[in-house]
Image 1 (spheres, each protein chain N blue to C red):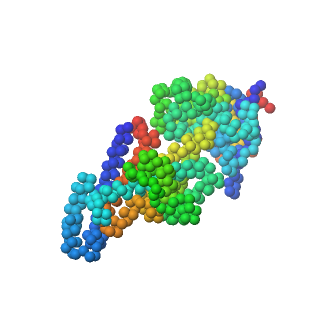
Image 2 (cartoon, rainbow over the protein chains, first blue to last red):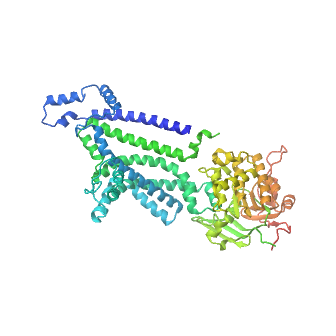
Image 3 (cartoon, one colour):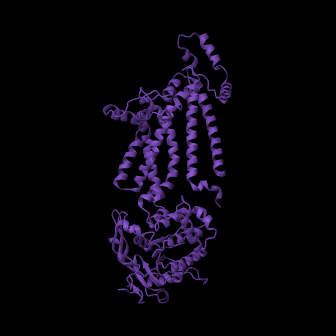
Length: 341
Length: 293
């Protein structure tokens, strides 16, 4: 356990360093790009005095390091400032929009794992057979087009020509759900409304699948490659020599050692999903962080830009730490590292 | 007289590539009687290891593999069995010990876990407590100290010699009638190898398991085997009682093999004859026990 605790401490330390780096970078970039946030916020009819007043309020005339110091001291009190776009605290905005995005990304991540890994396992188990070839073609398709293309295609096919799924939104209007966590799939259950849950699941299916497709393909291809390699190891031959069934060998003896290298990449794919979610959200009119993010960037809403980026970076880092821990927990070589001679 | 544990008759094996076809075994005929220890000796690439895998049925499904001839196990022709019936034999009635013990045990599971699953091949409903007890008594028999610690360990936490003993114990735990030992312990150092082979010999004797011992190590073979088959480029070139083959080698290849054993004479590595007369007919020492025709 000592090794695990040390691992967690190390990852958290690295993650904080990364966050500090990201915040400095975005802080500087947002201020260097041309355009005056105060002018954009007040519109073309505002007087120069009004603009100057707002610039002072926003401390835009201070030096960059002084501005950053101010930002950090506010951040340490849990304050990300006020958005010029919504005139609300940035934290309130993020709390409103982030859950929808996270819900979409988590469902897509779950689909990636639940579909991609078994597909890769099947593919390796039947290497060279038709099932393998089919899965390889499908996963190559998934990898070869970006998710917003899949979003458009899936929407056309399964929401427009064949209206099986809703075209947009998170839930039908007839269901009024009090936001508790902001995750509709959880809130509907908390409210004890199974039909609303089904409706929310029905709404999220297409966008999540579109977002997951490239991840599914990636996960399947990786798992297949790792498992095909594992199949050539002496311990698989030994398992066969003991007459264990091929299904059991695939599920137990070959899959588990192959999972570890796949998981690292799955963690990184999750990061790609956070980015791609912006485009998929745009296609499906998903009320997540993307519309907010794009709007505040166009308006040069400094506080909101920084807040959005920081939250997304933190999510990414946390997920990757969790994946690392999962790998450490799955891999006896790491788990028992301190016992090795 | 009961049927031999293993009877291989006129076995051919070839691997078909895209353009070429390589014949690996040429009409191999070989028997192992119940409880007998038989060695198959030959240099690397002579086809020894594929023979063991053919007996287990591990190679037949691979692409480009062509097999003809017949393998009988305890009076049953193996090719007549369904795939499932054949698989059912593995791990129960026949088992195998591999060259490199550490990489042959799965790195993701503890020894105890793997032992349990091997025992379940014979007794599917065996609980983990019973399995633990059985495994412990087997590890005792292969002279492993501190059995509880070993059972809780992963293969990479143990030494090669320890893993080798574990593998021997696993292979014999289900009382198989045939044990295939493919160059066991070649990956280990010589003293450890000698110890574990001695253990394997004793245990096989206790359990009454017949052993087909595949090796290139003539010294070990001489100690271990009742009978010897010498294989060269997929042909059996000589067979007979160990004493006869070693004492009176009839085939030029066997003589060359014997001459190739380094001796502590200070004369350096022995010279090998460049050309071996391969047209020489196979030599079968008439020993009585080998003849069941």
